[in-house]
Image 1 (cartoon, one colour):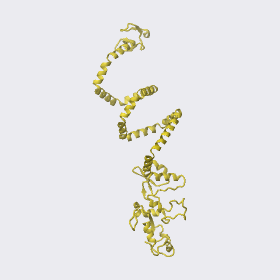
Image 2: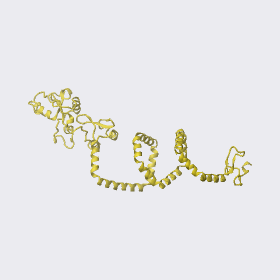
Image 3: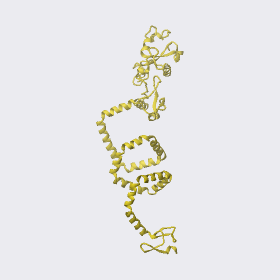
Image 4: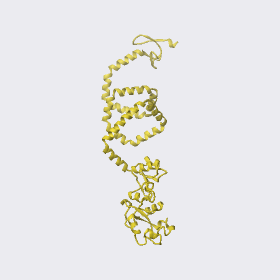
Length: 363
């Protein structure tokens, strides 16, 4: 039988069974195997490696650029092939690769630290230049592997319960120390954040259904509860409004301090009607907003605007008490500041008590 045939090695002279266990295959030979056994071939290769080691290293040093260029070209031409091979290899040797990486990292920990310190600016610059691409890839990966990530997270938390608790306690102590040492800087940062406009994505979901909102260049824009003007609220205003939605429903958005003071429903829960004086009489909020918008949030007597911080009122030319039919007619209304409104109602015959008795136009 062919399996029981033996062959003599040309180097050592020993006889071995003619199988792939003892011989390397060679198509050009008659029997289909090499003339040197595997053992001799291995010794020969080891000797040659030692013999030509210096020559090889010298060649690599001389032709460094050439070899790197060839490697780049090959990788560029065989991207798909290489990717397929790597996927298969990693799947087969997952545990082995993980062990090797861990050993390599432990051995070269100091080198890694030096390299990261040396290339810190370079890596941050690269991340800044490719931020959109990185975020997109990360989002795609999270969307594809949502279940896998959640399972991995749960497993990690179960395995490292004590470690996580220790880290949290250490970080808590560090945070407390940091807050104590940097009180002033943190208060300045907090004040800056609270006075700055907020992103639409951060708070839109919490305000939808309660407020009229829209996006303006990625920022959140809301309507003033008094004058109806669109403006960018600060972080503190948004937080107060969201907090109040779950309790008393107050904390409404106001474009300016003037609108806040002039609004008849401002602090209406804390101060019930009849206990706190408001600067403006109760008017239809929609009518007031329409009139103020039509008159460009400007007093039609003195020209003061909402940007000046004045309180704007909706004034009825023909008083609502005299002609209720025109009470909600915008053409019968005009925009006036608080001082001009008061001045008109000080005129003879235009006082609130006088208007109840006789018909009179106050303009």
